[in-house]
Amino acid sequence: MHLTLHVWRQASPDQPGRLVEYPAPDISPDMSFLEMLDVVNERLIERGEEPVAFDHDCREGICGSCGLMINGSAHGPMKLTTACQLHMRSFKDGDAIWIEPWRAKAFPVVKDLVVDRSAFDRIIQAGGYISAATGTPQDANALPIPKGDADWAMDNAACIGCGACVAACPNASASLFTAAKVTHLGALPQGQPERERRALAMVAQMDEEGFGGCTLHGECQEACPKGISIDAIMQLNRDFIRASATKVDVAEWTGAA
Image (cartoon, rainbow, N blue to C red; front, side):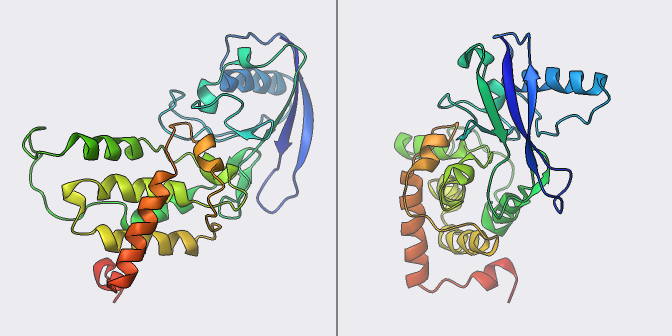
């Protein structure tokens, strides 16, 4: 395959960026998208040019590192697929491909295609955990949980924190990410004691990070490589409203009082 890449290049956060055109000849259709970028970078290095910086880690669709806008779509044209598992056979010989970083105020560009997603870490730190002492791990069947609840929790626990939902949302909202983290814990018995405070704390942190508000466009669930439904946002809204109505003291829970 012979392709033409238009890649966003930006030396640092305080430098202006621009799209740079790179020819990509002799690309195997069996390569993953990241393997294709590896080949392009090897050729750049051979010519003495700066390689393109991009995030990657497991390359198995698990870690959520490989966040890229490909031809205007988060992770590219294939649904339920991360950029690392997107194969070049999804494109045609002679195609032009535009590659950009996530675009969101809360995800500032670090370099080229790399963005700072530490805002997600701070949302998790605000309440995405269970702090009650539970002792040693229990046997799988020791705590009976209805199958529907277990399935609902697992569906939301599939979130890999890649940020595609934010990149695809016209408001750059992190509601689907936050909802998945709140909902998968709130669906289980262990997560019940902190359920309402968790919703308040994580939503407050999400707003503090500068993410936009959710207006239920639905682009987030379309872009999510794990197929997480916006039904999770409905659950988050219910938990948040219930917690607000009962005046839960988040400051006491987080130790900010």
